[in-house]
Image (cartoon, rainbow, N blue to C red):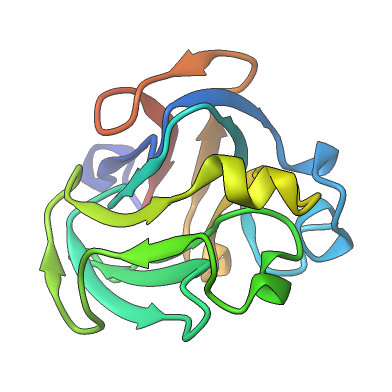
Length: 158
C-alpha cells in the first residue's frame, strides 16, 4: 500500500498515571502480549475514561475491564488492575452501559483506589489493541506521566 494512503490514529490515556512497557506487567497474558499489543499505566487517578471514539462493546460483569470497538474497527481492551476480577465488582462503579457510543475522554468507570489497594491488588492498567494483527504499526509512548483524556499513549497506522 502506498504510504500516503495510510492513516495515523492515536489512543489517549484512559487514566492519570505513568505509562510503562507492557512487558513489565506482572501477568503473562499481558506481558507476553497474548491478548495483543499495547502499554500499561500505573494509575494515580480514580476515573477511567474512553481512550478513543467508539462503542462500548463489552463491560465485564465484574466492572474491572471494558472493551471498545473504535470507529475505525480497532478493538481496545482496558483492564483495570491485575487479578482484580477477584474483587467481584467491589471497588468499581460503571458510569456507562454496554453498547453506549463514547467519545475519547468520556468517563467509563470510577474506581475506589483505597479499597482496591487495601485488598492487596495492583492497579496497573493494561490498554491493549486486541486485534493488533490488523494494525500495520504501533508506536508506544512509555516512561512518561500522562493525564487522562489528554495525553497520547500510543499511535498506530491502519
